[in-house]
Image (cartoon, rainbow, N blue to C red; front, side, top):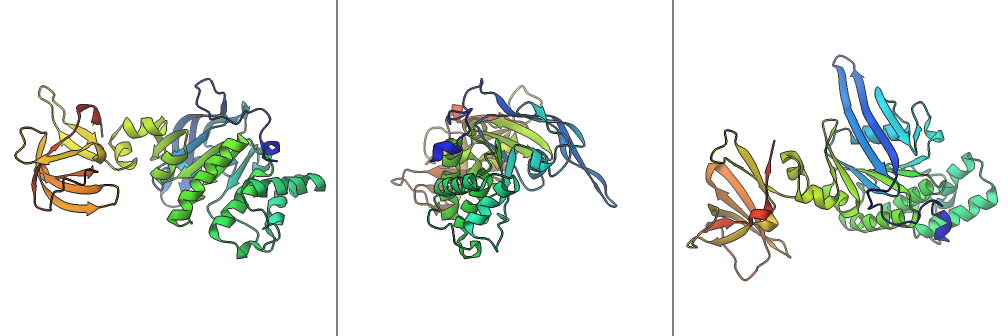
Length: 354
């Protein structure tokens, strides 16, 4: 039953090859908003981006970075100030939302409270003029895919948050779009359910072969689900890459600090005129007794937090810098106030620009 919802031109595998064709091409995209009394504000500034067919792609960044604006441009809910957007090789400038091969799942889900689950899923198909028999089959298929069997006749206000999110997904998938846009769809869920739904979204993307584009400010969410991530700030893409590459090889201090937890340690190198910043992930930092022969920095333990799998130490060093270390060796524990030496492998550090 699920296979009938899979796009015919894809095999449903992950988009891992550089030879995978582009589903979306964004060229020099710029969006400027005019604010009364404040002049013009550039929400997007010369974005160039390619998103592959059958890819789970995330736009990641803080509030106001332009990621939702870019999603709305793809959906046709906003128009470009300049630049071009192509979907499957077709320039979609001027095309209204209903004429684009995309569908959107909004943060609020936007379900119709006076309709049942099945009626919500069927709504878009009815607007497209799909025959009734086919609508019934697709509704059944989509509810099976999102694991809502038996709830077709339930009123949506009586559903849990997770169930409502699944209905919104089923409704968006029913018309078989080429691209599914996800605007922070998990932000209203509690932590346990959010983790569960992350796995569900990834499963749905693989089963359908549809290109998923997720907007999120949650770096852990993006790392867990994405084939590639675009990290955004101030209307620009600062780094584009796989979760592993963005995490292990950040392009600048902002990316290093925004993606996961890190230490940014100012320093200088003999023979260089400019200072630099070293980034080291806390899981790569080692703490050694103060009487050890060698190490990189001396410090004093300021706080100790037991987190289950590991213990987080915050260590004060010179120049009012605090270094965090995540240590899994529970046999060796340092108390608050203890003098320690901080060390890390050379391959674990990166030199960064601001």
